[in-house]
Structure formats: structure tokens, C-alpha cells
Image (tube, rainbow, N blue to C red):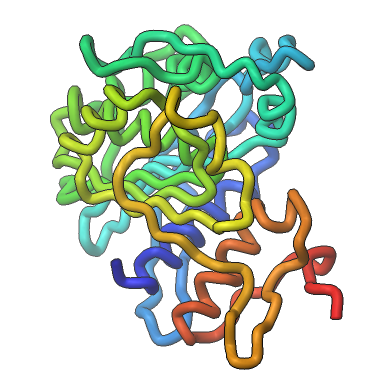
Length: 284
């Protein structure tokens, strides 16, 4: 997979973090550009914000009753590409502490195995309006006010958003009238069991799943009860050199956040480095 492309979709997901989760204003009509190194600048128009109930956890079950903005549907009007970008949530750390990892049947397609209950509940709440009773995201895709005809679909997400992007890409491939999607995820936990992963791999074979080898989130929920989908691209926060060089401070949060993934990816690509958070600069 071309690293410039992998970096571009991570940058798109990074834009979703610029919207406070509590903001339920729809960003439709806005636009932003993405550029890195010598890659051409691409402008994306926001078609709609994506809303959901937040991730409920045993520690804070009330989270699951709070409506939040969780991402955006975008379009590159020059190419016609549609992009569904989904961010993560602070609730991922509480979810890790729950350590229950319960199964429910995959809601996308019968016989497609089992998926994590928390991820599934959140995915089922995806809408294009703040009202939880409004149409589900994937069901509404064909009715959205696209600027130009949709020529391709890319789904991308980070952390919890990676698991939600996995469910979204599978749903688009199985049920939408749009072109079959490709998927880019970063720091995604496992989403479902082996049956789900196999069903996903058949429908969304063009998947890039970026994993920092020292990030604990992609190691959960545990195998073999849960299995990763296809497409792993492992990145290393330590440049083996010579001489060896630590790229990111060894810390639970620093190894997981998207800015660290972007820093490591740009280092790996040999282009201009995207910056770390100041608190994640390696200790010398």
C-alpha cells in the first residue's frame, strides 16, 4: 500500500477530532484540504456530520445515552470519491478496563458471525441527523446531497473509529447501492469473531489496517475469541537504525493517539515528519 495514501486518510480522520463530540451542529457545506509532502493537495467537501450514541461502558453506562458527533461524510468533488471518516473516543480506555468483551450477532448481515456488543450498539445508532430516530447512516447514503456522482467509496477510522469503520465498510459492501468500499483503519481493536472477519475479508478485501506494534488497543479484545480482519500494516515506534532511535514516548496514550501514528508513518515514508504531541516527545 502506498504510504502517501495511508497518510492522507489518517489526516482526514484527524480532521474529525477537530469537532468537539458534544457539538451536534452539522458541518455540511464546510470544506477542508489535505496535503503532505509532494502529494497533491486534495479538497474535501463535508456532506454531513455523523451522529451516534457514545460508547457505553460498565464504568460509565450513561455514556451510551449521550448523542455525540462521531465523524463526517465527505466528497472529493474533483474525483467523485466519497469518504466516511470516523474518530475514536476517550471511552476506549474505560472499555478496555471492562474486560467483558461480550458478543452479539453482527447486525449487518445474517450469518456474518458475532461482533463486540459495545461497538455494535454504537454502530447501530449511527445517523445523519442528531435525532436518534433519523435514518441510519448506510441506509441514508443514497439520499445524501452528493456534489457530483459518487465514483468510489473509502471508509477510514482511528481507535474505536477503526472498529466502527470496519462495520461501516462491511455494511456499505453488503447493503448500499454505492461502489464497493475500501477501508483504512488506524489502531483499531478487533471487531468480531473469526466468522465475522472471514465474511468481512470476502466483501472488503481492499483494506489497510495500520497497527503500532507497541499499542495495546489493537491487541484487544483477545484472540482467539476475536480475530482481526485482513490487511495489517505494522509500524514500529522504534527505528532500529543504526543507530536505534525511539520515535514516540513509551506511554499508553502516546503509543495509541493518531498524531503518533502519523508521526511514525511519515518517518517510515521518508518524507516531512508530521509532529508529535509535545507530551509524547521521547525522553532522551
